[in-house]
Length: 67
Image (cartoon, rainbow, N blue to C red; front, side, top):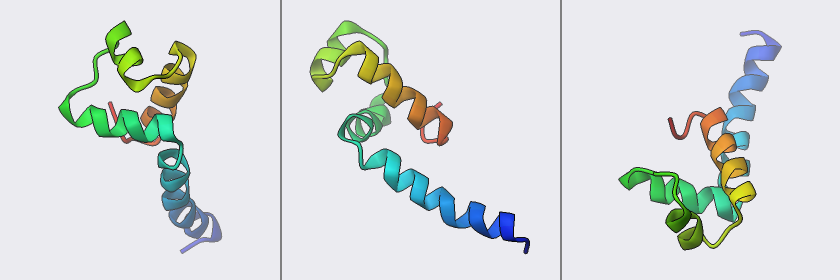
């Protein structure tokens, strides 16, 4: 196993924990189990700004946690 592969294996869980440790991302991840629809009511329910919503969504998508 190469050093790069070892680093990738170690960093992936770290990245997941880092993303889910953010309250906005965690709330969205929990809501995603029932399906996450983009709407003003969802943003209000999460009590976050639209910018925070899209930023958290990008982090979750990039990590492969939501589609």
